[in-house]
Amino acid sequence: MNDLTLLRDYGPDADPVAPAALAHARSELDTEIRRGHRQPAGYRRT
Amino acid sequence: MERPPPDEQLLAASGQDPQQFAPLFDRHAPDIHRYLSRRVASVADDLLSETFLVAFRQRGSYREAGAGVRAWLFGIATNLVRQHVRAEIRRYRALARLPAPGPIEHDLTERLDAYQLRARIAAALAELNPADRDALLLLAWADLSYLEIAAVQNVPVGTVRSRINRARRLTSAALAIDLAEETT
Image 1 (cartoon, rainbow over the protein chains, first blue to last red):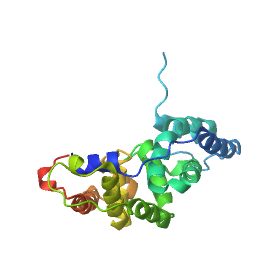
Image 2: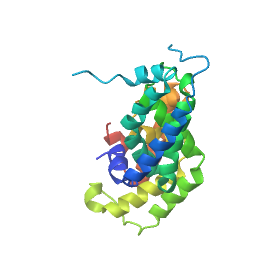
Image 3: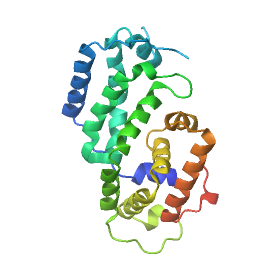
Image 4: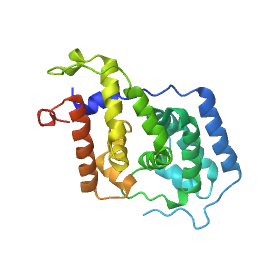
């Protein structure tokens, strides 16, 4: 087992994301989106 | 059945139609939360929210060259973690305060139990310099490629390679792994 595998398997655990936390973050984003920030110069593809 | 539009297409469309940005949250928020939670458990919820707010506000500055939208989002999350680096270090040091293991020879998983491994890994992460730690954890926990990490950190890929090699040397030493015997 190499160090990266150990890091993935035995590194600090992630707490499961609470549905309420996801919903809250999504709600904050939705509020920002509703403010309708349009890109002044437009999105540029390179 | 119609394929969902790719991330880049949604991001491009969101310049004129901000609602197009929302599906990016649904696609990537769980993975980004998992990454944030491993690094800064106590503020992961707040940083998840902030990551997408920053991304939405900065969507006009996204460039396709180098990294995709997923990597770009992880880059934003990583920059936000940097503002909480003390909380991150505190977390690792707390996890490291576990009974010290005895001498290690072969077959780590048999000779160290999971708690001891976790303690050693946490202690090693606490000692890395921030840029090296970011590169290593973007590789290990966010599954970004070297090229994506280079784009996220805005450095040449050779620098990413150096950072990851240095970080892996230190963590491997803490785990008593000989990197020369390991391949990734």
